[in-house]
Image (cartoon, each protein chain N blue to C red):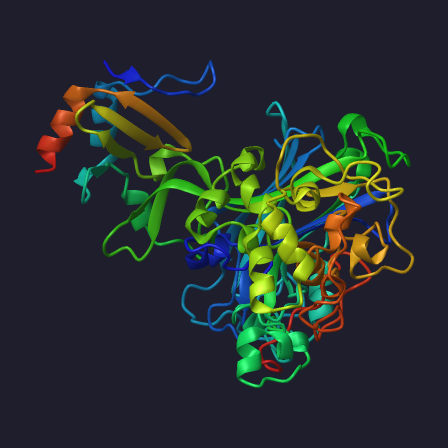
Length: 107
Length: 463
């Protein structure tokens, strides 16, 4: 399991587990490792559709995770710290095993 | 400039770049306070084909502190949405825009206003509110004032407007950032003197340029602690602190072949503005972007730049023999208690008779407004140093000459308020960049949203 390093308010949802992270990424579509250690496991289908006439080009908050990239950043490979950005949330977790998997995938 | 492109990183992101902030008791509606936050600096009116607009991806906020801790007690949030009527034209408009629902207007913006109280309670004050178009020219926007009036929305006892306005801030940038040359006094400036420059009138660098304004007029008791609305200038509830911020999502992904980006994560502050010129003139370049990313409550870490401003040290060097008393003050090493009060804590009771805007010991750059002080019948653009307590640094009105006020304060004029043994140099009471509130071509309005009609591109094609 990931160890949360969040300093968010009590009652906030817990950060994603490694399993949920990978499930989210898989469900969202292609997993792309960007230069460096950023991993974008975003949903790209919504953005690929052309906007219809007389519709908004973007949407008011709160925004939904399904239409947005799911971004994981390796903060510190040695300690296994990760930043997870999804929706309007940010979690920092420690998961050395997941970091190792991500770094392996990025090679 | 006040805060136009004032830091290296935000200068690359104009949509999120706050330029000026105003807060004043409304002269035509004294039971209300008007708050105006300007963004998107230095707009050439001939902005086609892609005219200026707010960022759908930016969270714009105006914050109010009413208990002196430099943290927001009330925040007004503004989120914008851009709409495109016709996917098959390159044009902003396909005919004259004579109303906000004109089918000729192809690309328009709406917005949502949300009030957030300390503790998290959120109230949507208005949504799907229309912005006006940019002022294009006599063929496309034949009656621009009528369009702008249509975009003033009433939300109960409040008014709101978001859209293009004429730049109200006037400054001789070309001269000031050429080694602090002030044209009216340049025969005394060391480098200008060597080149035999003669004294000359100031030149308004922002003349005929536009900005985008977010303006809100709300009842006084909506902003003060305990809904206070009295006339006691010395009441601890009479002063509010105001600042604006712009924030972007933490993560941005640019995907190849899409022509647009996508974002995720929480909003992260990238721009901030309280007092004019604070970040621009006082904070060193290496720390300006850091300052933009922090809340006012953390400004203690920048207080040393206020206590010993770099410009105060430069004036005696650049104008030899003109600022002898300032030079002695600089060399004494005494902290500039006057500037610390004006900019970071507010002016305590007893310094200026009948006036105070002190918010407590927390050092924070906020625009401090004592709402018990009524609007002036005959305003002085020099505000408090001109004998008009309804003007800057008691909040800021759209026409206040903040450049001259701050130049004179830094030159030592206000130090005598905190040290009666100090005599300001004669020049400290005279220096100016040579501009005043008549410098902008389009006049200020006497009613909300107070900033003038924006310049159109047809008549101002080369601003």
